[in-house]
Amino acid sequence: MRGPRSYGAAAPAPCPDGSSGDYSGRVSEQTQQARHVVIVGAGMAGVQSAVALREGGFTGRVTLIGAEPHQPYDRPPLSKAVLLGTAEGSAFDVDFEQLEVELRLGLAVTGVRPAEHRLDTAEGPVAYDVLVIATGAEPRALPGAEGIAGVHLLRTLDDAERLRPVLAAQHEIVVVGAGWIGAEFATAARAAGCAVTVVEAADRPLVGALPAEVTEAMPAWYAAAGVELRLHARVERVEASSVVLDDGTRVPAGAVVVGIGAVPATRWLTGSGIALGEDGAVLADGRLRTSAPDVYAVGDCASFPSARYGTRLLVHHWDNALQGPRTVAADILGQNPPDYDPVPYFWSEQFGRFVQYAGHHAAADSSVGRGDPNGPAWSMCWLKDGALVALLAVGRPRDLAQGRRLIDAGALLDPQLLADPAVPLKKAVLAAE
Image (cartoon, rainbow, N blue to C red):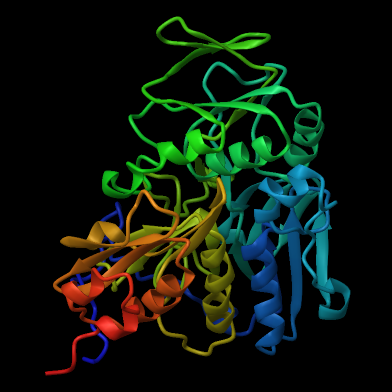
């Protein structure tokens, strides 16, 4: 097998301000001698940043600020066990007292003043030596439906708690959006015995997330689960007991769940001078440093330059929030870490299928399918210049595990062997020349 290669490895795309996105000159000596690290955001990225600092030997003060009053918790179970009432919560198994991490929960941060190394909060200013922004993403609201009774988002523990009795009462539910969260919620609602209709403005599920070649089979998943999927269906308005579509159709709805995507939770950075992209994400460099001195950004709220894919990536998934903090902590500790450039990875459980994805298919110039996409288990592999750059696995976890390693290695694959689902991916690697 050939050695590791980078594909599309022209320099990563510059920031909108014309800079390269390398903020190494913006890290002050204060960072290396940090006495107080403040982390804003108590989700996976924030919690792991605190843990990674302590595991790396940081002995200064660490403060973790969360807008919600709850003990920091993991989000994936919200659309599954917590929503269905089979678990009461998903708090992280972290002893913050033992780690000597100060928790300030239920505290809204309203702004940051980098020149003063100070946060503005609902309870007054908070000073920092180093700041880590880990505020994640927030769901898009359905225009015109804000504040209407019976319309729900699913992002927080409180959201899940409000939806539990709705599922328990087996209401007729309309889900707006056939994306990842829409499919996962529809799966849970059907498991609870609810009648579910999913309305999607596009012509297929997961538009914008996956290409048509792999989503064409997905409407059948909805039908087999007893979910009515309405495509080309745009919501005109939400009424007391129905959703009205733009063609005049009324869909009965005891409750409406909106799942039309998420945006970085960065509005509180307005006026701070910290560079943001057009998508609202904080523009971080390879070590997840921002344009402001001594300020980092990690997780769903930040994009980073990928030499592997030759572009800037914004990854709204759990694994990114788990891995990125290691780079942040290492840089704060002066350990000179390599640039953060992971193989993106995520998974979804929907309609009895375990769906996994690794890589970035937009970089590909060809694709090879493995197995029948109308069957229970199949994969799609995307290649660039013969090397594997992305993979979607449905019910084939071994393909995903092997494929993720091969993407990281820049492995060249034999397309004929790759197309045979009986051949393990690692056996499709071309021998070194």
